[in-house]
Image (cartoon, rainbow, N blue to C red; front, top):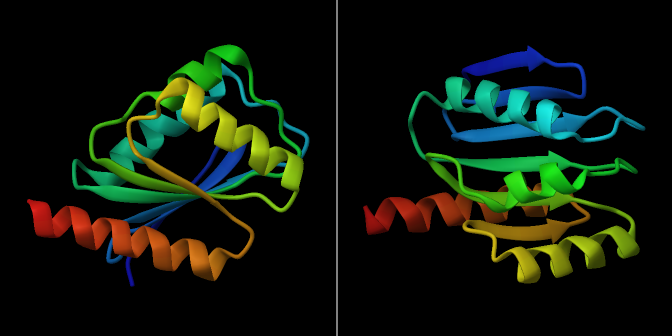
Length: 132
């Protein structure tokens, strides 16, 4: 298995090149800002090297700035799907409302279990591959 790692100020990133999955572990109690999210996106895109990829994102009690929310609603080159691991029901509801209001341009689903999230991301990547 080929895994690339990058440790940023607000999150740790792991890209599994074989499965084409970027896992983002946000640091607890770190606000997600436009600048921090931009750093995550740029690093993730470099790790993916232009190939289609999925994301598993573990959010704790991080707050997300309005500017970062706008960026999150946009698609990045190659991004197929995002699985957000969120254990708190209120936060899952907020994310689901965000997805509807912002008309997110990629598949996004909330999970509490990382294994289920990974399975779903793999399915989305397989569907994308079949369309190509």
